[in-house]
Amino acid sequence: MGLDLGTKTIGLALSDVERRLASPLETIKRVKFSQDAHLLLKIAEDQEAMALIFGLPLNMDGSSGPRAQATEAFLRNLRLLTSLPFALWDERLSTAAVTRDLIDRDVSRAKRAQVVDKLAAAYILQGALDRLNSIKSHSDPS
Image (cartoon, rainbow, N blue to C red):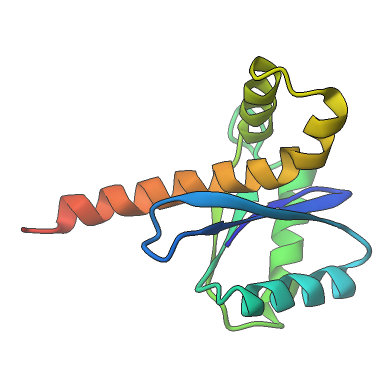
């Protein structure tokens, strides 16, 4: 399951069973950590997620700013509540890329606001899936 952890919302995405294609799932409104974590873990359980891929909002120069530090703190606390494995994926420009694509498709500003977070989560997850599949195909001797 891919996650785009924002300050007000969390975008969620899932992969297919073969872990090749990411699809947007939903956007949930953030409340406070305990409620957010409970809901995320419930959705992960309901969707039979095998792992969580969180977007890491690094600065453009690759450094870790306040948003990246907030994401890392969220994960430190979440780790205490679940045995699910998780990874961080560099999400620089993911929201910008998704927004640009929506604008190119002439999607209204209101509709973009409704879907951008879950689409960004799918973008993050797809990047991680592509990388995993690339590693797998290069290490497969067949």
